[in-house]
Length: 475
Image 1 (spheres, rainbow, N blue to C red):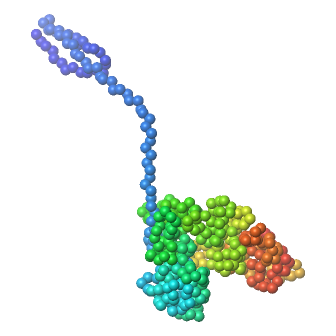
Image 2 (image 1 turned 180 degrees about the vertical axis):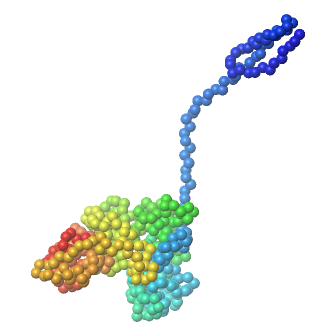
Image 3 (image 1 turned 90 degrees about the horizontal axis):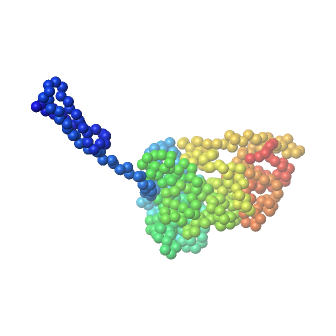
């Protein structure tokens, strides 16, 4: 008997069994074998019903910004090296190892011997080792800080800037007395705008955010990362930017810090400063511990705006010709915004400008005649304004006189005021030029401010005659 052997194959069919018939072909003795081949029924895999799982929220790790220093910034931005010779960079210079600090265009040689009559408890300095820091050095003046961190006050405590190479003598020193009490002028009010990374000393009960003084000097009443307003003062701390330079981890033009920033745990450390935070008046001063400005308290808004006080920080009106502090642009941003002191509303036609609209912040306007600073002004008045001058009734030379003798800034920017707008109506002390309570000035220049430089005796009379100085609408 012949047996036929075969190998079974599985079919993907569900049967209890399969019958396979084998038939012989040929002789009759071939036995037919019926083989029952079991086939496994495939096991059905159960289909899992998807379960809605809430997404896991990933909390990004908090980035703590740190300052890297101007030299590291310049390693990439080498075309901005002229910034090192600007007033911002040298706003506060440390005296290192008792050696005289060096300035590019001015001199402090001989200052320790020239200072005298100080009210500070440490007395007059015997050498540079008795001076901790120097303020200023490029625009107007120098003042000095003693080794306790107090600004030197006295009859011969300040220096009006002298050209490089000058030997400073006692006769060149001027009085600087902000507070007649011994050690009456701590550095703290100045730190926020004269340094990079300033943190006030947190003296309030339970406030332990910053319990340090710079170099352990009690008069400093705070700490900072770098003296002067360095690159990172305006653009923000660069620790993330240097790891992977991107426009998303650095600030080009800052929007300004608020009270909330200073009240935070980091006290605004690492955040960029905007121009109007510093180039303003006492009305916008933020001080520890509340950090609310007088302007904010008056108008109930969160703002860096400010009004122009009749009696300002140095005792003069702020923002007009008779304000000595305006020279140098100290409150330029506040005057440019032009706040109506009665309403708190910005009136300045150039309120939307930034300082860099006209200025190159990396070059010195004061020293634009020096190499590397030729392009300190990116715009001149006549780049935007092409107005002609009007004649006065009864005179045919007024227009020519103004055209060829006066400049735009003579009239529109006396002592570097950035109010620009001139209102010739009314006398110098006319109430219309002041707020309703008489404490603040309206945001414009009077005939006194704009005309008295040339017409000292009869500026009001001339202003009434001419009406408008330009043939069409003025600035």
